[in-house]
Amino acid sequence: MKKVFVILLAAAMLLSMMSFASADEPALSGKLTIWAWGADAEAEQRDAIIQAFIKAHPELEVEYSIIPTADSVWDQKAAAALTSGSAPDVIQMSPDYFGMNTKYYMDLRPFVERDGVDLDEVLVPGMIEGYYDTDGKLEGFPMHANIFCMAINKDMFDEAGVAYPEEGWTLDDMMDWGKAFIGGEGANKTYALAKHWVMNAAMPYAGGGTPYADDLSECYMNSPEIQKSLELYQKLILEGYMPNDAESQAIPSAILFQSGLCAMYPLGGFESASFLADCEENGINVGLVPMPMGVGENAKEINVIYATGWAITTTAKNPDAAWAFLKENAYANEEMGKATATCGMPAGKEVAENFYAKIEYPGFGTYFNDYMVEHLAKSHINPWGGTLASTGDIWANMVQAVTMDGMSPEEAMAKYSQQCMDEFSSYGFATAMKAN
Image 1 (tube, one colour):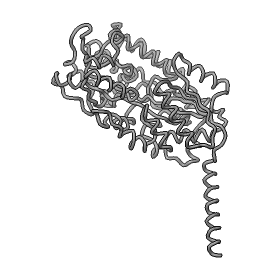
Image 2 (cartoon, one colour):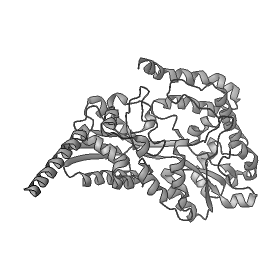
Image 3 (cartoon, rainbow, N blue to C red):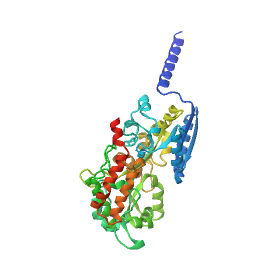
Image 4 (cartoon, rainbow, N blue to C red):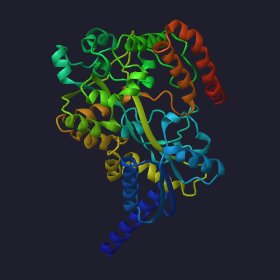
């Protein structure tokens, strides 16, 4: 009788535990719809992520689409679905949208609170940045992120007698030793630094400032630090450290580096494997070093985050399954995390530190990915994404004015900074914050 009682007691305890767990995390069932963007390696990554989730949840019917971004196919299809109320349960998004589609996204804070998740414990430091709206709403959840390190042509450095840059080097430093790499004419002209497309996003931070407040409450595009950034940008171009726009169009930045005509190249995580393989094929002796610091007393690393994540739409028919997908991709499903690592740094700290950061590149060991994990929190979300792209267009006009049109930084600031301020104000971020 005692043995029977013990068995019955154990069964009762198990049932109690099961009902408690189901109260916290509802049992999943039904259909889950997912939309992602991507082509080539990105599409393969998204498919692998979703397949890993399907494998873990045979109780769900998962229907998904991976839509290309070329020719605005994704933009048009996603916008039409969101506005018509026919969007999927889960839709891909980016933290640099800056609230662009937030009215169509569910607030994820109740899910986080229900599950008792400490985001600082489970996510790579800096990974959740940008997913909070100005009113505190958690509008999305991270999939992966990519930042930059600096690739250098070690042979060019050795031949010039220049020491490899170390942690803490600045653009001011490069204005000194970078002169050693400037020379030649026409197709044989050499440079210190490639004009990668990321420069327009990174250079606002070069003067030691920031284009706007972290909470988007205020724009600083009329600040002395932004003028200093323009001065640095102008010097880089006019004194030949970096190609101008016309020269960059003649020889793309990656080809310039891989042809041995440029000493440094800002290398993004999304292009690292193919870029380094191409360098090896072209006989370029590559080294990897940190990105530079800006100048001034508030100088920070000049590094930019390009990230992507997922949102649950307000029209989602299966929000619990949708949250399970977001959570597992971010940190709670190792197979999904490892699939994510093929195109960027996974959001989950465990997989990022113990898998992604240990991936070796031939000849470089684990430097690149380890650097990505360590420096994410020191980097800035792409400042001109989504809603803010129109202010970024005005910044691009300022840059062209001082690098191509002969205007001084002071004149460019006088002409364009107020335009930036007015455009930023038109988004209504400050008004939204006051209302909340």
